[in-house]
Image 1 (cartoon, helix red, strand yellow):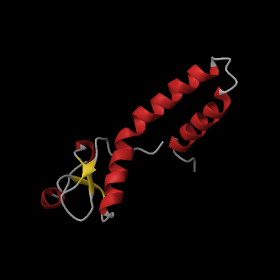
Image 2: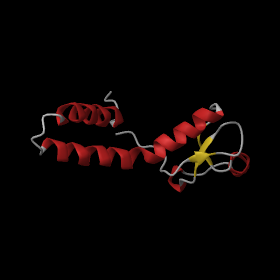
Image 3: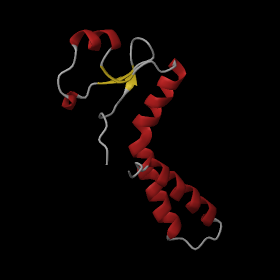
Length: 101
């Protein structure tokens, strides 16, 4: 699995950047941190996209865990109406997995 900058991410101060405070990334440029408001994860995104990227990435782990818990529950039920929800949850979990190279 490819590692990514740890969350939480947030919209930076300038230029539609998405930033974090991940100190495991090694040295960073202090002037860049001051300009962007943190360590740059993504630069030059449209402001609405930067907000969306931030919300999606910050919610990813919790939403994936909720999908897995809901799927486990639905698999254990005998309600035939749960099949469509099971498929949707399974598909959502698959989309959250990193692609294999």
